Image: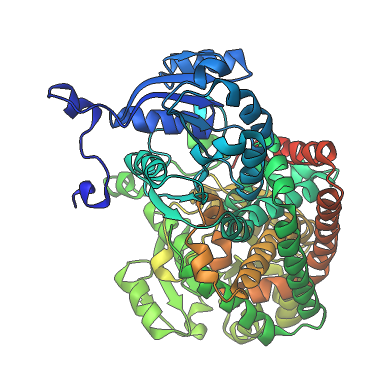
Length: 307
Length: 307
């Protein structure tokens, strides 16, 4: 199947090099926060030859140096220099974004487009409106639904977004051509791109991403209270491994996500606590048939799903 | 490293064939319930040449026929014939075991050893004592801590137990040589074998296996209540995939496990519901530092673990 059918550029970096080449989609990309998401975005675009120069901004000098060694970025720079890039990708924990946007504003280049990779959108949109004022028109909010329990530049991979969903939550103020530009960059990373409102995004992601993370963290926090937790874990198998993998994700990133989307997450949490009470009652009263029906309904829904 | 150091036979099936061969550990094995666990046990032993003939018993004729085609078993047989095998592996859902043990008793061969692969042990031991009377001495209870969300003979694999823990919970009545025989069979499957009491097994497994399964099922049961569940799941990523994989496991098997070990599981469930309330309060009061500390503690424990 030709990738150009879905709007994805077909020319890879290596294929481009021998030809009269078109300019890349993004001549200068600045990545603020060169970790799993920011680093993978840069690596993916570089792999398909859709980025010229990649600048990196971060608070951790060692991580920036490592990102250079790994060729995720060409060099590090100041926030003021990053502000003049063609596209700025904010890929920090969402809690850091309001301050970063305020610092970028006075230095923004005339045609610079801003986007982000934050896992929550309503809070980022609110912060962007407050920090950028009228300039918010050039901020196209986004969320690549892809991740890993690993973090930092070492975890970045050019194929992280391949076949994954990227949700854009464009603002009424965004000129369509800017949204299109961000969309094309994600398509070039091999992602599927969808648009929806920030509210819908946060509602849906609360249930399919934020709540599972909270449950996995709470489960391990519970296990940690057993004095013999390590001994118990010796008898854990592949079910435990997969179920709890996301509890190893970045605490800083997840602190921000859980707080940013707390209203919707708490609603989900209330509902799942009700479900747990329902299971508890079925066990207490030994209702075998009802229990099996409930398990079967869940198993059927889960089996119907494919990533 | 020589596997014989750990008591595991070093001669593979293919290596044995050209030699003056020792008899296999188990001349005739009867597997009752030829699914993931029973089928994998037979396949693993056959692969290392430690089983002569494999008989299969099951209630589903099509599954038995498939198990024959897949060479997991040589042929199907009646429970009475299975009772005269050298070793009987009970690999059905634990709820079916009391009845099966009662039916096997009058037909047991003089030297037949019984073992099982059930995920709970106290209930199986109680059932075995009640069903077998004095003959319980030849029942060596066991639990291979290995599994999959898949079930049935198609899911069986000779390497399912490779490097995994198998817990034996021997009875005071078991002659040591019978325990040794079951242990050797599991070592031949490539497993690590540990012994502990049935009580300890059920306590530990409640926390590292049964509770995660219950949480995954309850989470998907919660999701199933959303009218737009399928639409939401389109935006689920690899975190969701891994976290909820075990909710696709056999509802019948997990009904039995959850009920059999309900007292310990309900205690775990109470504690995890308390943890969820703790997270809820931290979100309600926006305690960012405390929340991050709790997430970091969980992430650290989870990162310290390897299967």
